[in-house]
Length: 118
Image (cartoon, rainbow, N blue to C red; front, side, top):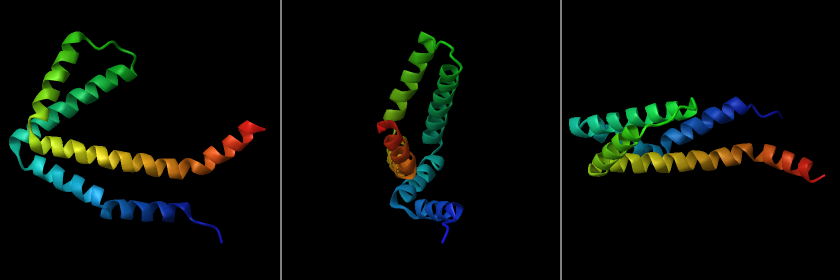
């Protein structure tokens, strides 16, 4: 019997949505969204993060001023408990997704690992 990988993927999506990690992330995100100060801080932090990442991916230099601005916003964000908890929940979710990704690509690792040994 052939396995429909898309059905498995949709089951995994459903399981992710029902996981404690996702529930925590959703709750922390709502707490930040409901607090105007926390939301503003979080939005500013995400915006500067994305700008720096885009510049880095484009091979552009990041100025000292941009680094200082990012550090200033990061320091402000660390002072807000709601944003800090959201970022911790994001980190937990990210770690879980990385672990799942390792499991998903294991057949390829096994295949190429075996081929590389010969």
